[in-house]
Amino acid sequence: MPITKAILLVGGEGTRLRPLTLSTPKPMLPLAGYPITAHQIAKLAAAGITEVMLATSYRTEVFADWLAQQDYLDLQIKFAIEEVPLGTGGAIRNAADHMNLSDDESVVVLNGDVLSGHDLTQQLTQYAAAKAAASLHLVSVADPSSFGLVPTSDTGEVLAFLEKPKNAAEITTNQINAGCYILHCDVINQISQGVPSSVERDVFPALLTTKAKVIGYLDNTYFLDLGTPYSYVQGSADLVTGKVSSPLITKTGQAVIHPTAKVDPSAMVFGGSVVMAAAEISAGAVVSGSIIFENAKIDVNSQLFDSILGRNSKINSDLILTKIVVAENCTINTEIPAGVRVWPNLELTTN
Ligand code: GDD
Ligand code: MG
Image (cartoon, rainbow, N blue to C red):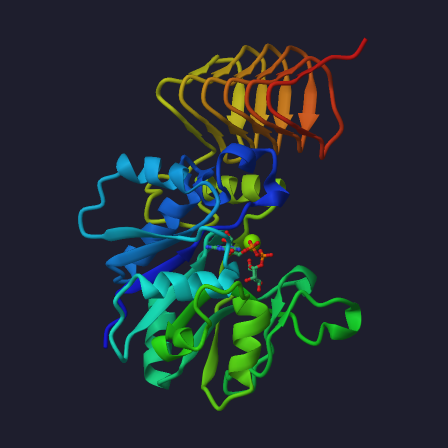
């Protein structure tokens, strides 16, 4: 039967992206001007999905407020809220229990923090042809150590699933789980209800001990886990410049500048930067590969590279800053080293 339903796993706390995720859950952070979730929903819709269940736990209200302002005509978007986080496995079961799945139905499941250029339609076609119980999108990466390792046979059947190898000896493949699954409801029904579990550490390893057919869909087009500040800013820039596409981005270029933002003609904004509503980039300033949130300001002759400047925050004049993350309502009066993250409502000055 056609696959028309999807679950988005969007309940994580996004700890590696603090302070940005203190107020905004990771999937609601904007990429090229739209929340990560919006790009994923558009991709699902383009592949024929008509019902999306948001499996939330952390700050559900931010998703609800956003959804209230959207106008999804041909899509049903619903919430399956976890009172306590159920982990990726428990979240899938909980979401499916809210979906009225019929006996032979399968669903698409996406990690909520992945930017991918993979061909979901092709993955669905391969899954249907193989009559599999589960399909996992896989990619080959140079350093697989922070992912789920998924070796496959010559015919593409998944042989093992090892989440986050503990040492070099455990790294037997560079093929990793890219966070897009197609699961038959029989697989989901094997997950315990209301009990925390991990699809990566519990569900897949257990499934592989049975005779179930689990296949890999290897597609090495663009893949990025948006879980760290630098990968988040990189993903946004890659959408702006067109290195990866989204149905929501119809025009690519060096920057996206909101019509209400003020950019001095002598300033340079490039490298996939995004300048949001009412932000200001002053004379002589340089902004490359960065995200400037609403009402933030970069004063004259300052330069910002591969960084994030939060809502209402300001960088004063004549500073050069690279790979920094500044939360909302901050003022930066001094240069700070790459990698520094500034929590909300702070003013940084040197004596
Ligand atoms: N609803 C819900 N409940 N969602 C959750 C929970 C939960 O308890 N815990 C995590 N999630 C969501 C997160 O919001 C995120 O979208 C997704 O599940 C994956 O969690 P991450 O914390 O981002 O995991 P990861 O990046 O370390 O690893 C995962 O993604 C890799 C690919 O990017 C794993 O699936 C790896 O196997 C995979 O390689
Ligand atoms: Mg992740």
